Length: 235
Image 1 (cartoon, rainbow, N blue to C red):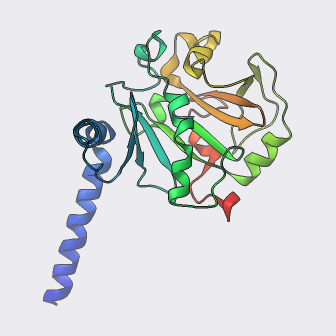
Image 2: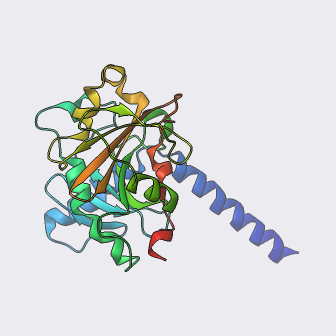
């Protein structure tokens, strides 16, 4: 009986600790600011879950999924609604995230190298962390198939088909040199309400498809839904 009581107590402590960690909306910022960046500045080995530190961003292994990586500014930026992301000197976080995609292969050697991947940022209403972060992960197989048959225009236009249950505005861009946040802000519906929007970048041959959806609307505000953190495409 004592052993059962002890196990129950330990389980309760673990559950409370997990809930506390989940409730900490600055957990990602604290990891980058207090662990990744200081170690990189001192030339020390990066502590887990830090994987890499670039000029203005850090990559860490997400606790969810087999291979998902998060790329996070080393500056305090709340999220998609933060005006800093539209500034001329804003970190090129999508380009940084794309540059870190090979880190997925550290955990899943057969992970796609380009097509079959997606970069996503969720809306303010649909996220659990208040530090901007880009999810780098595989596409769901059905979404990858749908997008392989989709030919976007060079301007935003609503898609006629749903991806993982949501419909999006979509457009093609040649690369990620121009911030997807700036391109999203050019949408009249999004410019004054950025926090309600989610955005994704998906490679497609020699260009990228940008997807944008709104919280409470058909886009759902949670582009992460198009990703598969088991990466069935690689299995």
